[in-house]
Image (cartoon, rainbow, N blue to C red; front, side, top):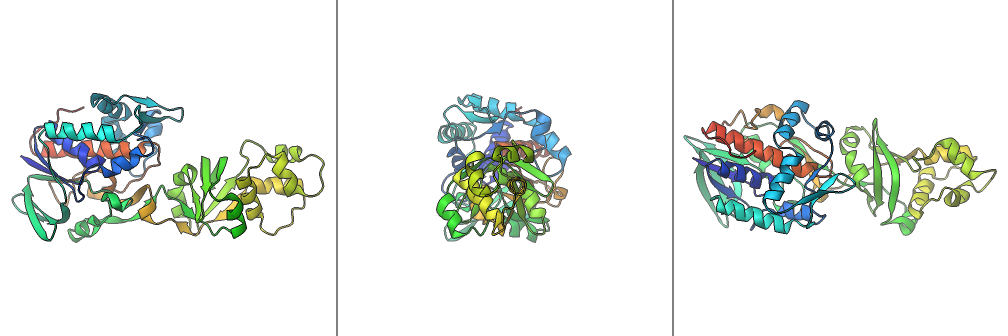
Length: 401
């Protein structure tokens, strides 16, 4: 019983692990020279594996059918992922933010132990194999571009885990979409998620505020809001607060961000802090409201050339800064991507109903989640489910929990 895994990111590696522990003969194909490249990218930030929060709140972070994610996360939740890391000798801890990290705060040691475990389980690695085709026969035939030739291999079941369209240098360039579409599979176009958004900042704002953060703010897109920080860049804004609003911003006919620069204060409280002054409101507000250079610059920009006639007018403006956005940054710069194979194409085991015996895992599926450990958790959960589905189809059972 041979199961082929195509894609050596977190979802593919997890699928290979579960399949091998279930007794399957497993080959993992990877287009690059080594596996786990996106795992190592995540490790640059300390390797945020998952998140420590109540399960219902955790599940609500994912786009897509709620019942699907309830099932997936219930079967392989944050505690299961932390237990998996512990088995590989990496204890984890939850930061005050709820983000869960390995104590080493690195991805490389964990990846080395993981690959070693896979080799001990008998998983074979075929690197420099770029997937280019799939044919159905008595078994599944997979075609790969290897250097200047095409090589073909057969398998009883195939698990595709080729990633979305972000970080293409790691191998997840989204090229697989045309292959699946040619086989009749419906794919929602890939879009950047967890990414920066562009704003046409004036030169004078960048001169004083580029590279500086907007701290402790509240941002809104439509009816959705988020708290956190933003970073002013030469092209616009980056940061967790705007990453969380990606789906809402994409849904707006004309994307714009509403920023409350002083969410801890009401309009009346801000007016009171300005006292009895009758002029130079913007200058006085910088000191009396304790505005950073970046916050003052954004407030000034949002007002434009309007005359600040009163303390009340300025206070309302500070709590409702409208920032028109020209669009998201390119998908190649995004942390993750939205879009992918539609859920309607997949059964509960993540098998493509049009292609029985072919399963999907990770960001190839049409879902997205914010940063904070949810992306890796989603990859592990879907990789686990796809492998268990393949084992069940082939008459085996998984030995993993």
